[in-house]
Image (cartoon, rainbow over all chains, first blue to last red; front, top):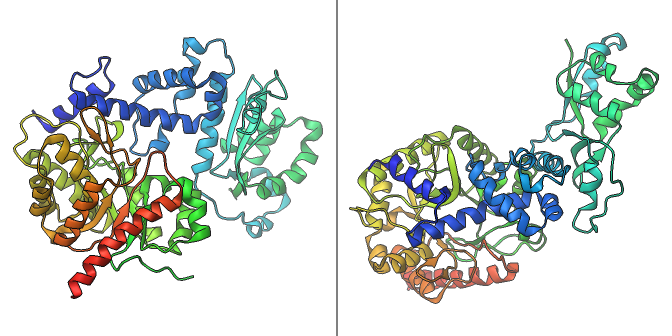
Length: 242
Length: 278
């Protein structure tokens, strides 16, 4: 039997339906399942708290069969857990669960993202005010934008380890910006128009194009302070001019 | 504060997240700190490791390269490892004599190789490829196993020797893994030690196992067992002192417990060095 065939058989015994008959394979099967479950627990602590440890363990077990790990770095594992939960019948009554999972994955990615050089204000000073419209701003690699019809920021905040799990708001949509602050990951709900503005910047639209997401009456005062604010809290890290 | 190596060969510990803060606050005297390479592929973690590197020699110990897989090496994983090694300038870079993925599906576990010449040649060529890409000699570690493929014409030590000869890699000899496999598969651990060419061995590992029903399982969740200490003493006598790392990955105890294990390893090295001078 070729090496590839031997390895395929082995992998099948780890992830197949049947418990392997060989006791040694069972040792691997349980350690592999435990490693994957531990990685998922580390990335999704709020989901775990919302559903409870036994429910989470079963979801993690099924997810491991449904969606294989595809990286030698366990920190890459679990990207598809939100989609899995969205279609997971036992969790159907928790409508917000998949979106909370999306927020947790965004936090996980943000925490590991590369850093960025400081914003180059000197180059910006060379741009004439008339040229601002056509600038494209670069969001910091650690920024993630998550929107939900449910109050996911409130749920996330209420389920921090030191909190009792009662969200400040039980309904309403949340538009969330995830970024890396001095003390770690920051999860912030922002007004919907601001989120759409950032989302357009993230897609590579110019400042002029992205500004159309803003209500006309607030666009000017918003834009007057937005850049300084975004640079200060590492949401924007650079720009390109045409 | 200067850091004094415990023994000339450098004895250290596997550094894990629960001790991150304490290690920089206390800066215990250790010859070497070893980390799992993949844990520092992300950015703030890599910056933190740079700070550690300012105080200690660092060994990068990978668990995810899947050297023995029938798949091609993952170029992205190698790129990240290469970038980290360039930044950290580690004293040692090691991986495992194992595989963890096939057809792109990862088990994220160190799975045993079939002990065949085909498998030895295959993993040797992948090690050579990784060494070429990283521009340095890799140390490759023998792993614990709970399963042996049928028709294994090579003894594990013959497999290790063949891979090292073909690839030019060095051997990271995990003494606990030798003991675990000797028990699980019924061979003589001393015979393994005797068969290893001392000039190939560049590092030792120590760790704790757990005895389950039909196997010793390499959990890295306990103190080094007495027979493993005895085997380590023999290994140091026969092979010579080498950088030695004590690993602990499950139910991680207070840092002082790891430092105590490191002191014991250091005493073994120091005794050997004294006897070598006498």
